[in-house]
Length: 457
Picture 1 (cartoon, rainbow, N blue to C red):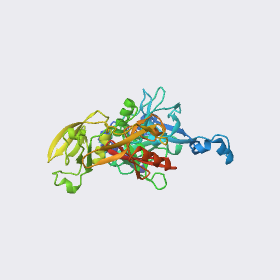
Picture 2 (cartoon, helix red, strand yellow; picture 1 turned 90 degrees about the vertical axis):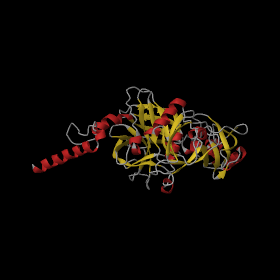
Picture 3 (cartoon, rainbow, N blue to C red; picture 1 turned 135 degrees about the vertical axis):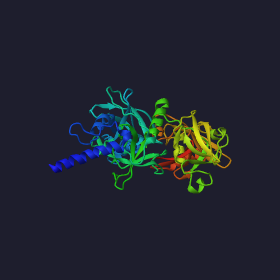
Picture 4 (tube, rainbow, N blue to C red; picture 1 turned 45 degrees about the vertical axis):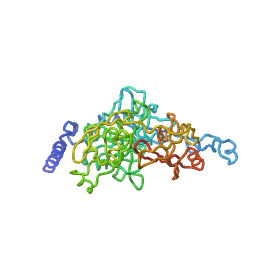
């Protein structure tokens, strides 16, 4: 009897600790009404119907290779005449708008998809239509025609702190819906060379292959991240997983719904992280923020009065942690929008408003079609960005929606400055490099104020 009383007291103590340690989540039902023990089951009962499994059908390698589609080639090498079986892969997604049937997932989950099938928790299945993608953040938006859906409400990932409890929900290894739990291990992770715009939430909640596109949920039942990647020597979970924060997801989805794509402009200023050596002379109490290192002539930044050595500490009321964070926030702003920057100049606070501009105008010859990048056209480009920097390359003038070039992540107004480790100075030079390539094309792009790499296989 004493042992039973001891167990009950510990159980009660655990529940009390949860309630006192997490006052912000006091409304969450931690106690399971059936047996009176601490449980996340009531929370999961409400949120898991919004997380879906995604099955993707893509072409097989044989279908992709034009030689295998040649009947003479097939007969010469005695290949079977029957069509190759399409390849299938599995991922996850999250319903973010029940009325419109919007489902968010990762771009890499649906990349090159011929068919996307969404399976709900209640086992209903629907063919999904692609609304739009943003390879730079690895986000894609799908739409299904379905009734009686349940959506997850978007939380504010900027309110997360290291140590906050989170739950990951997805479809690991194609097993079906699975829930794991953990904490936020780190915030603002970047430099992982996973995607172009990196501001990942790191968590130790188990994320495995197939979890991509699934939900990272706080204890309020809000979507705070979309699970995207892991680091592990064997390709499985070792307690280091990454999710795209909900603030970035919302900014991307707003533009995809509005434009069908993300239209990134430019600020016209480059920035650097603030080191301890810089913080002292600048009169800063911390290294938080981004210092402006250069301002382009006639750019939106210059027109707004920004100067080198300005320290940006906030954008539209949100704190700027470092240079990467500033680039991400600027990259999420649509062309033509006005953003408010909080600066520190010579130890004094200052606020400026900057209107995000279009990428640099075309300066060159008539656009040409690129056979290797079906759906894209390019033109010669040669424009000085500032008195200290000059960029040479070719400008992407047009990309047809849902074309192979589009699905690989190439967008209008991208400036291609390199291909397969070679500089690109003209369309003729670019086409020659592509013609010499065999299996893989690696493109180095300038998009707004950001450089990124796209690999095409």
